[in-house]
Image (cartoon, rainbow, N blue to C red; front, side, top):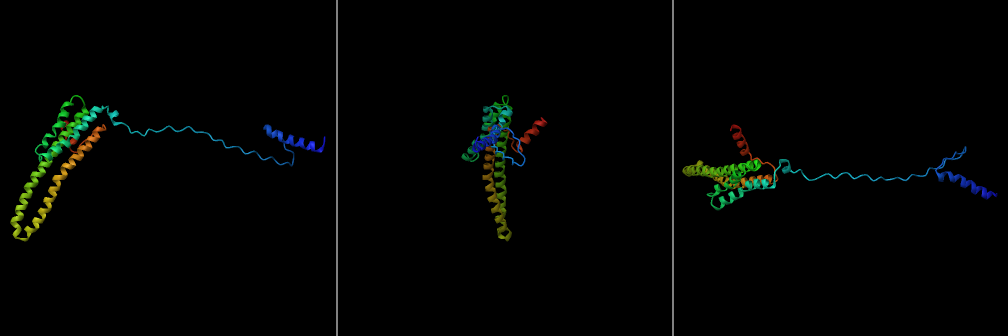
Length: 218
């Protein structure tokens, strides 16, 4: 065997164990072969379960039907009819508006506690709003009339002129109150209608507390 053949055989012997994955004893003074770099393996992770972004349905918790929520919302929203009747008739027919929630209250008193409670609150709230506006109009008109008469009598002195300026400001505030009160009542009633339509038991301030005290005493 020639020297070239022996050299080729030695190279084949030295690479064969590495190809088969076997270990080979190194001769003294020989350098250890560099390990082959291992490929980084990626592992596909299971996707996380998707979280439900839908809010909890309060109607399902309360056990309400869509019909109950619609009638409760209608009882609150009837304040729009009350407002329109008051505007078109100068306030004379405004008292006819609360009849709508009162009829709903009477119709559902033995069918749905939710509709009964919401319609009862809407009826009392609309009546209270009408009485408050009526009281503001009458009481304010009387006080303003007295104030302007007194100002006119005292106009001969300096204090009368100052009183007239005060009465002018008071009259302006009274007029603003007559306009703002019904608008605020309508906005509050519409908000109650939206809450009732979504199945949430709405409570009017003071009105709901008054009903609770009455039921407790009864």
